[in-house]
Image (cartoon, rainbow, N blue to C red; front, side, top):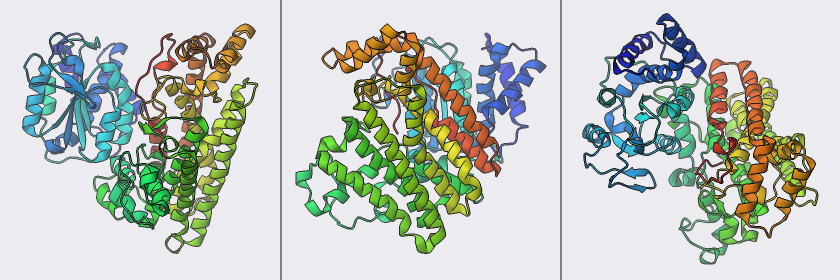
Length: 580
């Protein structure tokens, strides 16, 4: 970044002038913004190394008016804990981040006091998952914050495509200890005042919230009323404490509304919206989506019912102990009950669509059910292939066979969500094949990314690093490692998985070393990029523009940056990541 405050301020003013000329109706992609910034650098003889920093500054100026137009009580102010003075800081951490004390020992207190005086919600924490969760929950509509440059550079594309009004000031260093920031910039950002008129940028926030709201207790009860009645499932309640006739429905409803990002219902709602005028992405999107027909809502919910059914069964088959940070259904209620709950959710998914024939029309319902049933069959084939390989004596696997399993197991759910959204909007023949190919590449890349995440652990699901390896599940990492190792190390790798008597930490540490030697993490990351590029090529051919832009957003949000496991390190890491 520019070394002096004077140069940084001069460049910021150039970004202010450029932002005033940009069309705010649709968010820029990161590539489009890069073109604008490269021209600024060239025109002003500025070095290439400033590119990322200037993009962050220009992005903030792009959103300035819309952040300013948001009432401060609906803004979130995000601060990094590295601004604190490490020595003698009295603050403790809770589940959301640093419980900052207004002791005056660092600039956090000054920034916080100013923001809270204006009505901001303030959070001292790291990482984007908690921020997105807060946005989707409906508590805030804009974000202002401070973060290190590399974090902000990674966040630009996601923020731009999602249409979340956001401003940020980069830290002056990324040492993560007693760092500093341009304090006048931060105060200016906090105090930003609304302009006379503000052009609204299209946003997916309303659709993200609409998908999540489907599964809130009251809305879930309204759209999918329980036929057996009774009280909602209580934390810690066991099967023996539930009235037997109502038990299956009660447990299924509870799991349907528990955890996850609800990305599949979002896809269905967003595709339907993109093909019917994209009104859900406008400033008045919340009001438009509030009038959405219940038949469309239930069709979107059906995809989640199938997904949750597959998770219940998958957890049993993989003997997983945790899902969404809690005990899995089979651990809590027993395997037979969990199998039955999964079956119930499958039936519920079909019923949610079939019962809307009068509203959606028989042809549309038949097409959607045909797609759903085809997806269900292929998912079962993929899971069956995985189970047969897991239980086989010969643990050798080729990368192409792992990718075939992924295409069967993961892609159909994306395809069903995409096609259902198309068909709910009208005839969908022209989209059927492109959506199948798009879903295949997105699903395969997503599953490879999931493999990488498994090596960082996951506080929502498995909660321990390398769980897929110890579980003997076929992954592309395993196949790539076998392909890249010599015969002796192949045999060592095979023995590490089959030798259940050895210390798990030692086994996983050595497997990680062998994966690194074979270049498995790096090769997997390249495979993700290859499938990303294929998905983008398909998206490039899609019309209307609103649908094409949505597909790009899905690629970016589903295929988040690979975790630390993709880097060549030799120590075990267990870091909270994502959920499915």
